[in-house]
Amino acid sequence: MNGRRGLLIILSSPSGAGKSTLAKRLRAWDPSIIFSVSATTRDARPGEVDGDDYHFMTESEFKKAVSHGDMLEHAHVFGNFYGSPKGPVRDAIIDGQDVLFDIDWQGAQQITNSELGLHTLSIFLLPPSIAELKRRLEARGQDGADVIDRRMQKSWDEISHWGSYDFVLVNEDLDKTEAQLKSIITATRLRRTQQPGLLNHVRALQAEFEEGDA
Image (cartoon, rainbow, N blue to C red; front, top):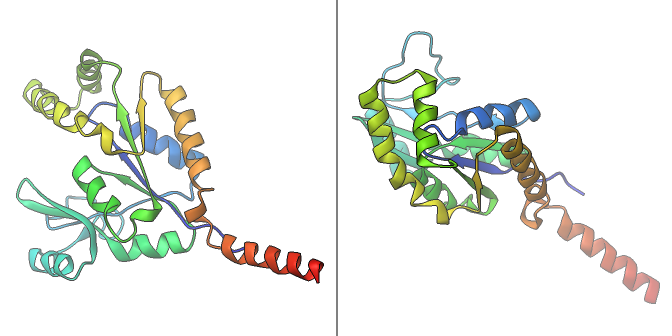
């Protein structure tokens, strides 16, 4: 049979629920899983490389890509446009390569409703409690109190969309959640839609069966 189709693996969660850490662990588990490289209209920061960190585009280029249907999902955030180019993702899944997306619920819905939605696996990560979510944000030491407050205010809006995902995991223990993610991905890779060679295999079985009856 032909090789499998790749998956569009979407990981979403409120900030501080462990999404970035688990995404890195998935890549360590299976380095063939690639991150989707987003396009953006913001200026490149020192050290960022076009095509590796982001696809840097002008606003007119970005809007043209959207109008031509070349973005799987896109959003306007803090004065700049961000999006996921469709072409590289489509090529990857045809080649049997999984693509990992670290996006919010709005982007997840756009991808799920796109022409590639058949190959999407969406997973939402919940914190064990709101108090623990805040503790994790504070423990990271990356943001000031005002930024943490804004992230906490936004968290409930993100959590309220948990029901639109294929799988929802409570990330109380990183090792346990990592094991669950691996099991989900391994099983979904065997989904009928991900095995394009199955139809020809069944036809061959049918032909063999009919020849035996002759």
